[in-house]
Structures are given as C-alpha cells and as structure tokens.
Length: 429
Image (cartoon, rainbow, N blue to C red; front, side, top):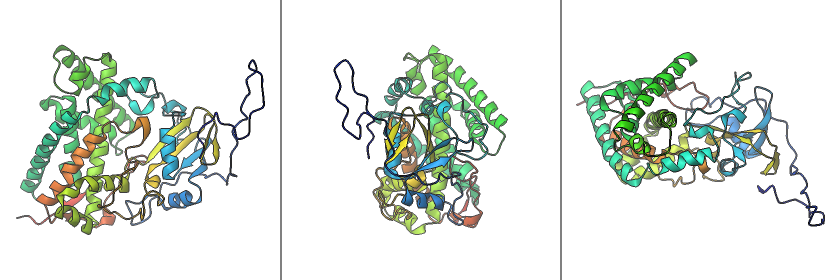
C-alpha cells in the first residue's frame, strides 16, 4: 500500500536544475466496481451488537469501496482495519466538518458548518495541535488516579441507591448515566450544587428523542453555564481542568467551548458504553461469569468490550489532496466514511472477531479512533468502565435483564450505538 504522493510509479523524466521534473499524476491500481448506492446501517435481526452484515461482505470484497452519498457526491467507504487506521493517521485527510459530505439518509440538503470553537473533532492542525497540547497535560496519571477513587465512590453510592430502591430499575438512568456525568463534572470542576442542572442540559443536548430545536436550546444553555463557570474560575482559580486552563492563553470563549465539548463528549459516549456493555455481558453469561471470577480481568474486558461494541461507529474524513490508498486513487475533495465497527471486526486483525471474548488481547482496536484525533478522554473512560463493570456484577451477582433481549430499545442514532433504556432486575435480599 503506497501513501506517498511524491513517489511516482515510473522514473521521472530527466530535467535541468532550473526545470524540475513533475511526477505523473497518481492512478488507481485496481479497477473500481460499481459504487455503493447507500451506507449500510441496518444491523442483523437478533444481533444488536453486530455491525450491518453488508459491511463484512464489503470488507472481504474490497475494504475501500466507492460510495455515492445522499447529496450525489461520489466518495468512499472504508471497512478494513488497515485502511481505516491509515485514513485516521494520514494528515492529508482533513477532519474539518465543512469539507465533508454526510453519508446518512435524509442529509441530501445538509451542509455542515465549521466546528464550534473548542470542538477538537472538527478541526485540523495547527489549531487542533494548540488545543490538544494544552489539554493533554491535564489528563495526567495523577489526576486519573485521583478520579479512580472518586469513580469507586460514585459507583458504590449508586449501587447502594439501586439496592435501596429494589428491582427492577432502568440501568441507564440509575447507573450508566450518572457515573460519567458526575465524573466529567468532577474533572472540570463544576460545583456540586450545579451538577444536576449540567446533567440535565447534557442529556437534552445529546438525546435523539427530542427535536433538533430542543438539542440546540440545551446546548446553548450548557454553553451559557460554562461561560459563567469560566468567569468564576478566572476570578478564583481551582484545582481542576478548567481552573488549570485559566492560566493558559485560551480566551474566555475558547475555554467555554472546550468545557462544553468535553462535557458532551465525556458523558454520552461513556454512558452508552456502560449500558451497552452491561447488555452484552448479561446476554453472554459465560463472559460475565469469567469477569466475576477474576476481577484482574477488568483491563482486558474493557478493551474487548470497546472493540466488540464500537459505539461511536462511523467516522468521516475529507481528502486534502490526491491520495493513493489500498490500490485506489482518492481525489482531493472526496469524502471517506470510515466504518469503525466493521474495522474492529476485521478477521485479518482480530481472529474470530464476531465472538465476545474478554480474555482476548484486543490491543489495536479503533474504538477511540486513531492518530491525532484519537479520543482525548479515553483514559478517563477506561477508569470508569474498569470500576463500573466488576462492581456491578460483584454487588448484584444475580443481575439480569427484566425484559427479553429483543425488546431492549436501541438508540436511533446514525453515529452512536446504544440503548435508550436497559430494564434490569436481580434477586433482592
């Protein structure tokens, strides 16, 4: 696989020093099949954790395939692990929203605006580099160790509350959502009295049940709250992430943007992983039993659940120049949709990939992305899951679904997999 646009496929024509040679244009190495007419989105019946079956077929046939987007744009779909990793790592692919075409149905007339200030996922270097360098130092080992003890405390408190209430409960509202909500508030330094309000705004901003207007209203309210918090920390700096950042060169607007971005990103993804991960464990009782019997398995279990579920399953990039990849020529301006859930089920990278095996060494998965845009808060997410899953199974060893698996309602979101709710029960004492 060649990714170097400066290396011509034939020797350059001799030239004089004053007239440098020009490499010939890149050409596709293999013939293109007919482009796909749509992005496969429907998961197989009875298999809520598996990617759409068509993605596996496409990955086997050709891991980088032409695809027609809803707005008529002719771009690409990447399904193989090596191709997906290459796209994510190559700086010639942009993450800027305004350069991308959306692959989802109903987006025929949608044009994405540039990323809001502070949104690291939709910008490129050098702007992205400036933000990330400032933030990386805030996710230190010391701070993560401090937050581990806090995660254990919050987890225990919510398990206590679940036991007092008694079964059945919705695990999303009783456990999976409050833990990351409180943890991200802890990291940012949101005052305790304001955390319920913040949790309400973040839930509304990321919900797929309300209207778009409801989401924007909640996001605006969240940003207004964070702006006030930034001003308070400017006046009285505190030992937390936002307090630390008041000593940087970020403006108040940038600080508010970063704070809002981290709140939304750090809550929804981890909440979905805890809920969907519990669903997966309860429908694979032999795996739950293995984790219950060996708490030391927690690290491997978290990585395997991340790989197996890949909740943030669809990434996008736009080519900034002509790029040869996997025997195909991606032209400047073309969008590439990356099916991360298909890449994480690639048998060339993970043997028997459709089996959940908590003893698997799932290193190299792309659940957090790859390259410069790899999830900034991945270590915080890991801390919460390493605590949450063993604690839940240990405290409630008879935990089980309160409804048939087929009746668990899944989220209707083209980019984020999860459950709307997860009714569970157990044998109360």
